[in-house]
Amino acid sequence: MGTINYQERIPNNVDIGNDRRLQRALEAWQPNYIDWWMEMGPEGFQQDDVYLRTAVSVDKDGWAHFGHVKMPDYRWGIFLTPSDPNRAIHFGDHMGEKAWQKVPGEYRNILRRIIVTQGDTEPASVEQQRLLGQTCPSLYDLRNLFQVNVEEGRHLWAMVYLLHRYFGRDGREEAEALLERRSGDIDSPRILGAFNEPCEHWLSFFCFTTFTDRDGKYQLRALAESGFDPLARTCNFMLTEEAHHMFVGHTGVGRVLKKTAERMKEGDPRTLGAIPIDMVQKYINLWYSLSLDLFGGEDSSNAATFFGASLKGRDQEGKAGKYDEHTGLGQTYDLALFDKDGNHTIEKLPLRRAMNEVLRDAYVEDCEKVIRSWNRILEKEGCEMRVKLPHRRFHRHQGVYSGLCFSPEGEFMRREQYEARKREWLPTPEDSAYVKSLMTKAITAPGKFADWIAPPPRGINGQPIEFDYVDFAH
Ligand code: BYC
Ligand code: FE
Ligand code: FE
Image (cartoon, rainbow, N blue to C red; front, side, top):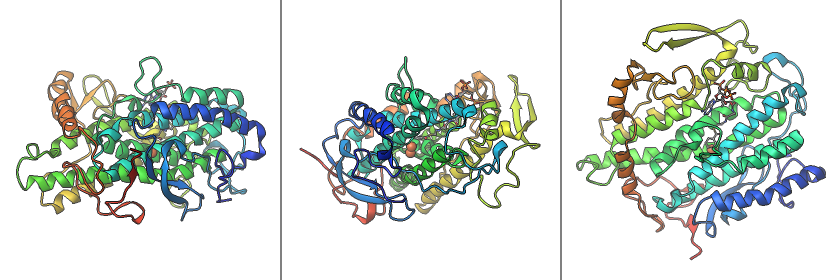
């Protein structure tokens, strides 16, 4: 079950060869996917050999093979973790029933919508990152960018498989539409806010992979609990890939801070070509708040429906000892509300309606750990400055705090006051221009790094830091 069939045109471990209709549908989608990849994937590097990992099995250890491949030849495929024939639904209204192997008719539309929303983020992120290779700080980082990109492409395959296999004709139409929307396009944008924001330089890329890919981790963990078994199994395998994306972001920002702290011993980081810590803080504020929005409204009837229908659980819903009870009924969640004058009340929200917020809580806690590890780097370098997460009410565009203004400490502010201070908290055009001025060309000599980032402590897959992670065709 763990092994993947690479003999077929579409690598997979779900026996698509035994389902002619499905195989034909996916093989018809494949050339459109490649067209999308050539048009919207990493620009300028499609002919180069990149040291990439490819899934060879879905077993926990040893699932990956490493080798140089040209990105358009990457073996994108469909990999699900093994099925457990006895798996039962463990939350919501269907608790105790056998996990579904087919889509329950009554939930067909909402399930398709969840899958399409998830699927849409994957190609969106590739589109947002498509020009970054041209200003990479090293070959090591270039390779990591491309690893993230090909795997986001594979995550799109994962969702498209579910659409084709379980949703028939409307699934096929949605799969086509996933290749037609474009990040940031006025007429046909991607579905969720953060995936239409420009990601113009490597500091934004590292913040994106720290905070936005980490939203992915929590959404996938919630969907990995799903009563719809194929969705749960596909998300479980996606999570093994996701860990590297967050590693890239977490260590990337960490290396930026390390370099800045080193430089601060010599003088003003700005005049020494490093990125000042308060500028890093602004990008943390931006990408963290955009990513908080991805969890949806704090009070959400959609979230209540998803949980009640046993389609989307809480973080680690099935983990022994984590939750006392799994219906989410008869309980409340205290939510702080503000009116337009800043008057503050606490509402007792029925727990099911608060499921987006419950998931956001798990995410916030995880992000706090990341911040602590960044601050340990600063401390070790003898730097007194620290970074922090802004309050979850700061700079929100979805949910009960959108339309109101809050400081990074979470205090209510009048709009004029907030507007007057916004430049201290969020990147300005000048900040963006400064960061970009440090990243005007690709650093491609093996083992060399741009001046604004420290080298990593070790290479990828046991290779040395100066390894040829990308072999250029010319
Ligand atoms: N932008 O009830 P509400 C990843 C809409 S990241 C724009 O508050 P709900 C990745 C919402 O659709 C993980 N619109 O929230 C990371 C609804 O519209 P309707 C992505 C938004 O429905 C990096 C209305 O506002 N996966 O994988 O519970 C690289 C009110 O909705 C936004 C998923 O998100 C927004 N931010 O939505 C690559 C999982 N937020 O119904 C990949 C699938 C909400 O009024 N999605 N709206 O027309 C879901 O489970 C849910 O749809 C949401 C929350 C999490 C988005
Ligand atoms: Fe992904
Ligand atoms: Fe990711």
